[in-house]
Image (cartoon, rainbow, N blue to C red; front, side):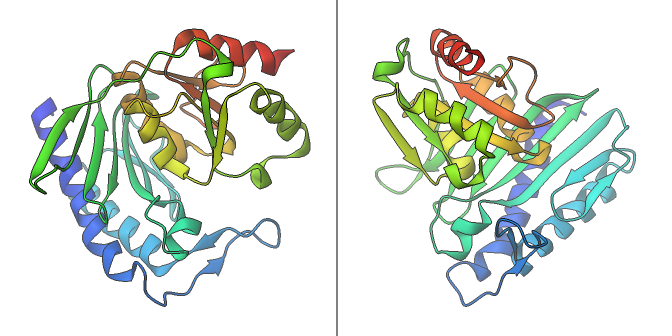
Length: 265
């Protein structure tokens, strides 16, 4: 499987998901609550249909590969190559009509994320990376497709940083207290962007993204994009974020170290 084949195949997966999801966006689509009575965790027909379509294509093309997906669980997760799928990361934004959701597609080799993509079909944006290079494709000023390398921006000090998280409501009390400790030190804090927050970090528009209790399918596809843009992403204790948990991404290693120190204090 060459890099060119991989790139083309992941784009095909993203296009398939987008074609499945877009007819449902900004319609009267219903949402089920899969939380079991805790914090509202919606899932829609679009989530399930898109993941099912991607799984079928993966099985047809790479029969020996494993799959980890949000909606339909794991298949052969001990395989050498494992696909990680989140058909709509940001379903709450999706059902609210906001275009800050995305389809996440990642590939792991021996437990390490080696390629990732985030597609936003409504805005026609596509972010992808292999851990060494990250790229954005989207509409240019003349609406023609444009390609641009992604680079994080330098920001060494918390007092100059912009911090994003999806929602403080998703944090358990102990983690929320630690997040607030960081938030009090930054210049600007913004909520509500799901995977789009990590994309904006890779594009150099924000400095730090923090989340608590994420799953592998929420984060593994984003790691090669962030690292390919020159950023750093770990757990709150500085370990690999590939399996999820409490994660922090930063565009500047100095800022990442400052946040880790605050979290450990």
